[in-house]
Structure formats: C-alpha cells, structure tokens
Length: 78
Ligand SMILES: [Zn+2]
Image (cartoon, rainbow, N blue to C red):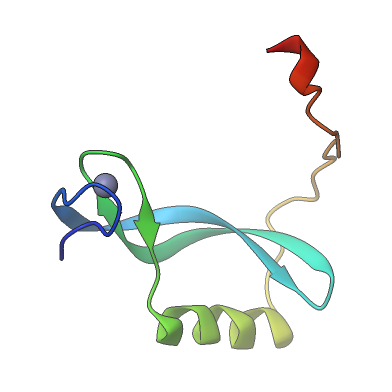
C-alpha cells in the first residue's frame, strides 16, 4: 500500500507494538503491520488489532515484566 502521510511504499513486517487494553499497557512482539519505507509510519489492520485484544484477554505467556517511566515532555527544553 501507499503511506497516507508521505506517499511512500509500505512493506509487510512484524513489529513490536505498544497496545492498550482495559487501561493496561502491553508491549506485544511479532505483530503484523504495513510499515512505510520512507517515514516509518506503521499501519495495522483492524483484524490484527482485534486478534491482539483477544490474545491478551485470554491466558497468555508473559515474557517479562517491565518498569516504565511516565513523563511529561518539557517543551521549554527544546
Ligand atoms: Zn510514509
């Protein structure tokens, strides 16, 4: 497909995605996406996102628990 933002060509790839479900954040590896070769924009099919929702809703193997920082970018620093 063509990228909506820059018109570049996209390619099917497996990517790592930050995925929110029921106010919880998951990092999900190996998710199918179309990735723009020019700007890096990623496109996910609604079907794929539904499948990730289902996968996370059911019992699944957890590779690791991560600590993440939530911060607000201080725009004055830019
Ligand atoms: Zn693009």
